[in-house]
Image (cartoon, rainbow, N blue to C red; front, top):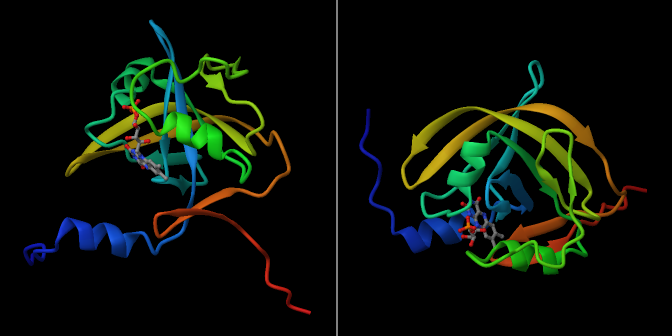
Length: 166
Ligand SMILES: Cc1cc2nc3c(=O)[nH]c(=O)nc-3n(C[C@H](O)[C@H](O)[C@H](O)COP(=O)(O)O)c2cc1C
């Protein structure tokens, strides 16, 4: 197998930034209260059985708590939820202070006004360089709100618009 090319990490980041994604907040209930962090590395993996994937950085302080909880939620952000995104993209502090969250059936905190909540149970973790690849089974889905998603591309946030095909 060929050795990975020597690619500057800034150049790699900039190139991968051209791949547009949505934004999620992964949340769980830890012994010291609710925890969560923003991620774009979310993917639908399998329909049968329903499985989803997430890549927490090794530096994430929330992921070890989410891993220990094993049950977590993926909260898919709407375009008007930049404030929630900024709040959960920081590390430390009480990110849930003033947030009107509610406990979901699997115990994870559900964020308000998102477009979708996915209740998950961790099934497997794989080391992938400076990140972890976490595979979870889907326990429940809740389409909370019909609103456009928050998108992330080339280091900026945006909103989806459908081509007028007429
Ligand atoms: C748009 C965006 C996407 C992000 N995607 C990820 C991701 O996929 N995985 C990850 O571990 N961190 C990601 N982050 C960074 C974390 O949200 C950030 O490091 C956060 O402070 C981690 O919080 P924690 O220490 O409570 O885990 C992203 C941040 C932003 C703004």
